[in-house]
Image (cartoon, rainbow, N blue to C red; front, side, top):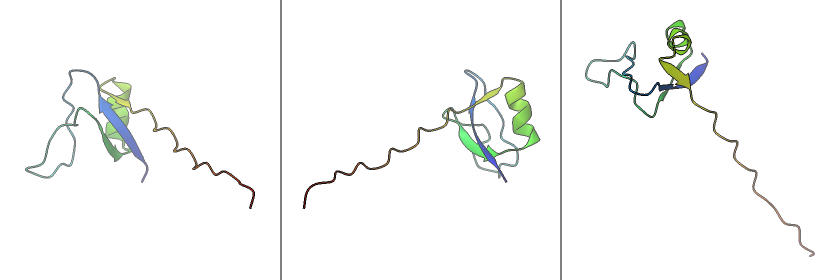
Amino acid sequence: MNTLHVIPAAGLLVPMPDVPAGAARHLPAEGAVVNDTAFWRRRIADGEVTLAPEAAPEAAPKTTKGKE
């Protein structure tokens, strides 16, 4: 299943479905990676959460060619 990294809109507590008892029941302020479901697509459409910007791809290590 595809996943999304979502972040709650400022000042909102967004419930997380299917959370086991005793666990945090709301999306953390820093966001979380969640399954791409209709629930989260509705939250995005309603403006309750936003998609996190994708992390910049890691730069490939630079190699220098020297004379041997």
